[in-house]
Amino acid sequence: MKILVLNGPNLKLLGKREPSIYGKVTLDDILKSVIMRGKALGAKVDVFQSNDEGALVTKIGDAMGVYDGMIINPAAYTHTSVALRDAIQAVKIPCVEVHLSNIHAREDFRHKSLTAGVCVGQISGFGGQSYLLGLEALVEYLMNIGKVGKNRRKD
Ligand code: DQA
Image 1 (tube, rainbow, N blue to C red):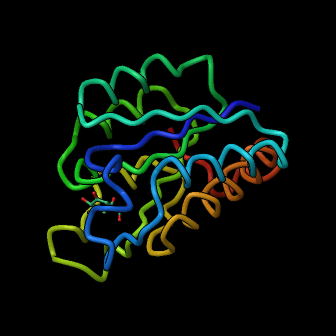
Image 2: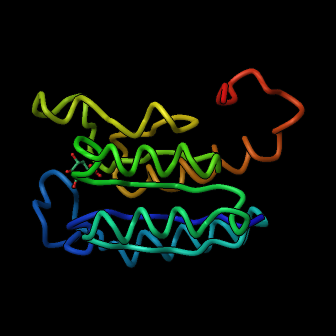
């Protein structure tokens, strides 16, 4: 099983960026723990970060036929990017959206996610742990595809 973990703009600054909201852990530390947990769950995890919307869209397009599942923290693009939403929908790779902070408990403009509606689900508010919870949920989901079907995307 191959999983791609995508990270949007400014997430490279984790650890230094608004630690009262995002904590002191770095993106590298989070991604290392995701790779390790993936190994334990039998999944090969690749990671990618970009501040560039187009680079993220290209990476998602290239994931078709390569990855079984994706985890994405689109960061600020969560709230703005029709292009990312369309890319996730186009490749039809089951995707889990994750956020460090609880976007629903923050400013109004963060309450809306353009991308969550084309994901299997969203995990928000558990810091770096959101990624691990997302990975576990995704692996479980992928293992049950074809058996359950109830929560699968309709397209
Ligand atoms: C974030 C939440 C977004 O609203 C914000 O723009 C980010 C990080 C999070 O992980 O909590 O950059 O995606």
